[in-house]
Length: 577
Image (cartoon, rainbow, N blue to C red; front, side, top):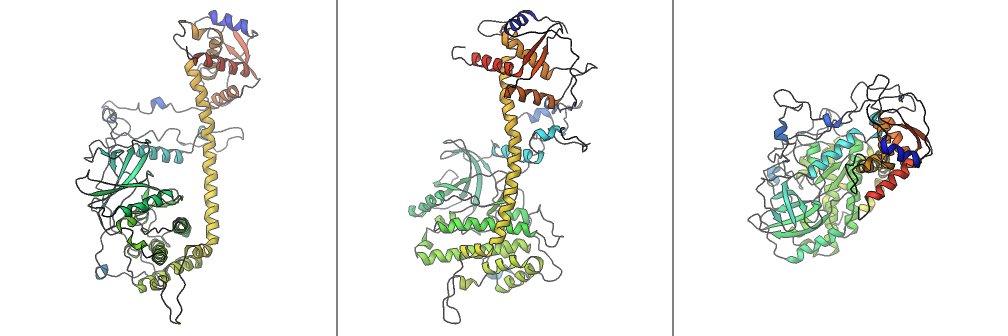
């Protein structure tokens, strides 16, 4: 290659000991090709259509699509071979409508939207399984593809905007509203008012929140909204945090807005088990694995324990209001709304009224789990389920699942009249159910669920360690890019070609610009990471840096190069630089 060592070589020679040597061209042991991210969107044909079948001109617009009119099909009942959970006509018990699907995620973007580059670093075939202990694949240095894709999709959903939504531009300090509902046919079954769910950004802290709106609601007593402060102080990993509530007329009517934490790409348990894209096929018996039911039961019991200990009541234990935010992680959403809607009147009766609400929470928890176990949404959809339906469903659950699960459901679904503390046949008041007693019943399964959670935490921590090392190397590379090939600094056009800067340029060539014996570029990620790690640690190992004209060479240690990087970067970071 043409060129000379010039003034940079002379300065380097005066600063360090220089030894000339004839050395063979460096050939690494493994040369693993790495996918070039710059070529990820370059696959276009003569018609200007890329690999996704889309026009790159259309994809250049940062407009996220949304399909708010996706319909939810009615739940599908299960037909077990032996005992089938009975069905009945809900019209005799009162009107029943399809629950509104208030869920915390957006629909898939339309065809004109360019997806993110999820395929980068994907483990494409053929897979090498006969690697030596010191050998690693490229994917071993990065986050697992499934986890990385999940986090990228969540980030994309959190930043999604909808400029032409027709919604108010601002609500108090919240702006850029995006509708999250997937069903335009609203239902007032749970709260008594039509509800809508939006995602919005906050001007006060820049975070993303979920706004739940109750349509045509007029607040008559301001004291009813005081319970929001109690919910704001409540902290539980299985409860979506409620921050505030305020009234507004921005939608053309009297509405009240409840502000919650936003968990992108979450779906309700209704969508997971009864929706058109249900996760578990009904052809399998039992439909839902028992470990999944125990996970739901333990997590929701933890939520109830915290809520009841704070002298509050959940009152929204419904499959359309429990969201699945990540792998086997459920959270109770829409808490606190019933307290405001009811005007806090149910609490006026003192402890006895609160005990009755706690009994209802436990009973509704049992109906929720039983409906999923029997794949019968009707059990959870109506509070006035006939006792014979509950009994038949429990009998079916007893045949499909363990005795422990049936025992837990029998405790939760005890006679609802007894749950209010009525007098039994012997003239004595029946004992009330409570969450503490229930947790003692399911204690062995709580331990199993905790063990699974800790294993999953270990997996995530291992993935985090990979990114921890990558982040450290990225900071080092940023310093290199600030220094190398700088056109001018401090009125010196040859600044990057002299002194310590010239050494760093030769080191950059040593790391990234090597060729093999056939003159082909060496693309070895292992060599890059090995050199950068040694440089960041400042080891005493010496390497030989060869000038581009191959006429001179410098023997220098990683420790000396590290000192060069620090000194030059400090020079660039001077306030008067």
